[in-house]
Length: 248
Image (tube, rainbow, N blue to C red):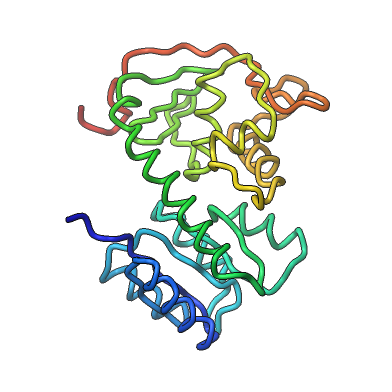
């Protein structure tokens, strides 16, 4: 029998931590609780965690710093929790690699829905890997390898993309020249729910442009007024060799 998903809840508020632990266990998840960054690191080291619910306000570290450091070494899904409600805090959370965001106070059922949605997206990405291994994409001097979720630039250097950034790029590579609205991109990359923070697509596009060096009058990703975005360069699809530095 396949084990149920293992959720790590990191929150310094004992009542919230215990409430979420009981609730998520009641919904069939395995749950580990941590009150700070130190305990969270121990849990990540000693367990296979499928998703992290992370409070931004921790006693021993910034939740944003913890998220950034975790994303640099792992693609485990992260949902941020915070009592701060300004848009800038949401944007920063998405920029450091979080998969979703929920402000406090919140209904546990909404968090449950977001957890399930993120896990579905993650499972869909993993299931698609065998198909993606059959091809690579060449565009504007870059080569994208879906099998390993790597992008190599013209000089042979890796372009470090988060899972969300690569999902967005692949959505465009599969549809070159086609205008994709924000709603379509949310559907493709996030399995959109009604409460999804729509600015996340604009944030992802901005981050992707910056990492691809997409500046000046010529754009790899073109913004269409009252529409959405478009990949404005040609794409060549080829059989998938191994990325540089990796054995076939």
